[in-house]
Length: 259
Image (cartoon, rainbow, N blue to C red; front, side):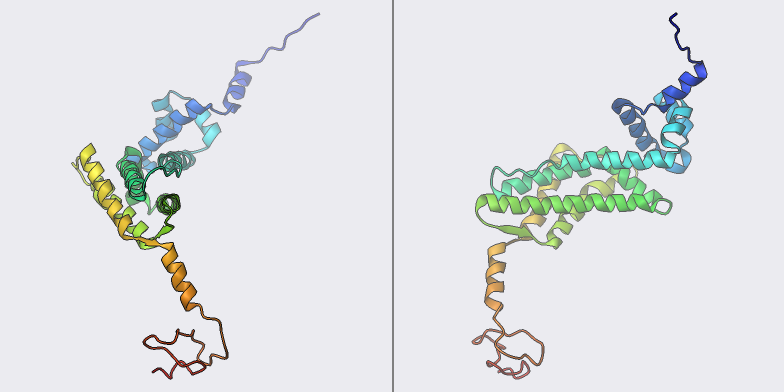
């Protein structure tokens, strides 16, 4: 005799809730969480608000995420991954200048994006309550700087002239984009930059990069010239300076005995 197991509505409800949300539902839930929390503040958003906005049962959200703070952390991570993805892969096909200009314009678009603007707003407004948001934002800026430095090195290698970017150049690049694009949007009644203005801001930031470049071969040659093998005791513990230059010391003499 064939028999079929019949589950109760309660058991089916528990089974449905136990299933993890699919990619599309996850994107909708976390996307709405990001918008709500960046607009109102995480303290003013409840699971019921997210459930209502997304047409999801509160019990499911409670089972999947436990609380709004967990959802916000996941939402911020998701948005930052998307921002990093906008930087693209490091691929150089033209000149060094062209590669830097193109990358600067991409970064300008990133700093002008709604997602980045909302992140900045949460950093300014919510850092006192959620210090992790500031840490996430700082890590994103570090990623932009590292990506830029790697791009510069790759562009120099492709052109046959090894170059590198000073840390100050990367800092000025990011600082200028924030100052001219992102931070003004935190003020009331500020209009977003037009496409032409955004392009111009990116080009201006690229100038900070050009001024921070240096040829690696020059540094290598300098280090080769000053790295003189030790030929005896150095009582002062100071490195030797090649003879024939201002401030040089006689072979074997104490560094204080300068000519």
